[in-house]
Image 1 (cartoon, rainbow, N blue to C red):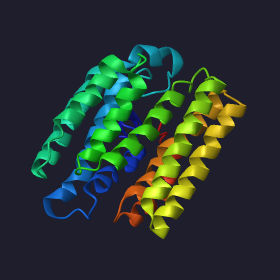
Image 2 (spheres, rainbow, N blue to C red):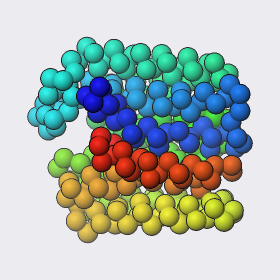
Image 3 (cartoon, rainbow, N blue to C red):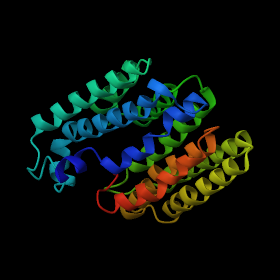
Image 4 (tube, rainbow, N blue to C red):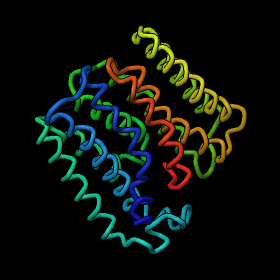
Length: 259
């Protein structure tokens, strides 16, 4: 079980729970309560598929991961990705929404686009589509996508480090995201969440500007993943409680790495 929790980066899926609430712009009720579960299933599917697609590279760079360490077979990881994808699409359909475009984007990123220049943009599209799964919310979807673009671009240096230029560009994107969320939020709780987002994510990313080593990049990537929760709280009109997921996500990430 622990190997599968590591395969899907289980705690990191807490950062996807708020996406559809942000997209809905209103509290989820009835069948639509299934939408956050659909997001989680598709997030986990993407993580399992990621490790399946990267199994040869991980054997060299991250041999401790479940597949190269022999704790999960490649076929079992692929079956997990397929099953979770089906579950995500099914849950969304039961809630009256179509998650097929999101599933296609997830599979396209992991199997084709990840290691190309379009990779970070494809991952950003996945997050934006997850927000739109909840409803029509173009600005929140764009801001969540912009944040994801920066986190993904920076995460490419988790093994060998990155460049100060990339780190500076990512910090600039975070500042733009925080400022827009601050202006759009208006409510005191939204303003507080936007400020906390800028402080926690921006500080970790600025540390990479000063020292673009792999260790700093990993720390900034983890901060960026957790920062999703703060950004969601700033953007959701009725989502102040989303921020309560952050302490849980941070605590569980000490048991299972979110990256």
